[in-house]
Length: 320
Image (cartoon, rainbow, N blue to C red; front, side, top):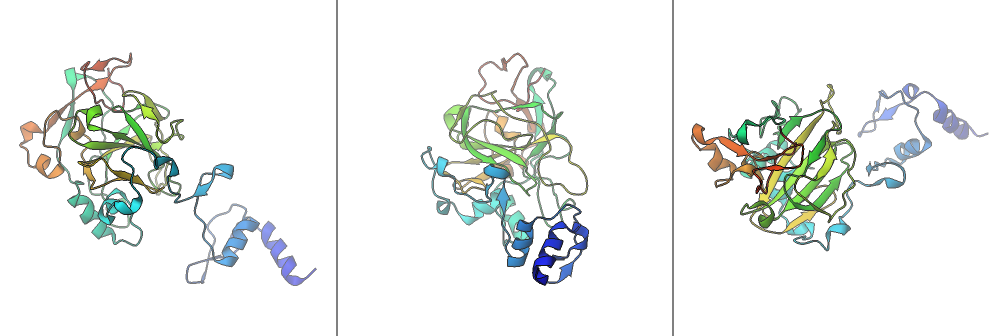
């Protein structure tokens, strides 16, 4: 046996902590994982290749695969028809200064508004916790960041409901991303009663739900289960739904395999989605007097009835 053959076989069966890993500049750094290392990984390190994959086994796909299932759907346009600012707004930030990204997100609606959910008839509903809309997340990240949504804690496995009738336009595993398993639904003005095309985002789902791109969903239909999937820091994330709304005056949207982005899209405070009258943009909402900050939020009851009965928008969890 040649020396190089012996070395390669020894490497395959050696404990991971005995093996060097290599930083981008080629300098050796300690291996932190104690998991066995495979020949595939060794070859990838030898070749200097980094292959991003989503899923596992036969279901693994490239991290960015064009959404071919989207191409025949109403309003879909190729990704190059959506501006870079909108893509940065929804989170596509590779090669972008984080402070610049935050400035773009603020200009496109990621601003604290002071709105508060006030559930109709004093119902008891799962509430937004301290992780509120558009708060500064720089203390949680090693860079400038905003919380572009709200978090609603619930026990693991609790069903999440579609907040309005619509069409599924995004399904993402988000391996290596803080969002975890994600679904996005597009709602037309006729489905919500709002003067916009809106897109509801549900992340940290327990498993990928059995809805497909292009599926129609009804208001109140289960579209996922609560969990805490997604990349975490030093602390384990509690089980909660991360819920967000994007909107546009235009019907066009895209899905590049990583993000859903409406043409000329903006963030909307999720509480504002339930307002019966304008304004809906964050700048105007922030300027409202305090006595206009409470939003009467409609909901579904556990028996499937809606409050009010004619509502076209509901909270993502049933209320009692």
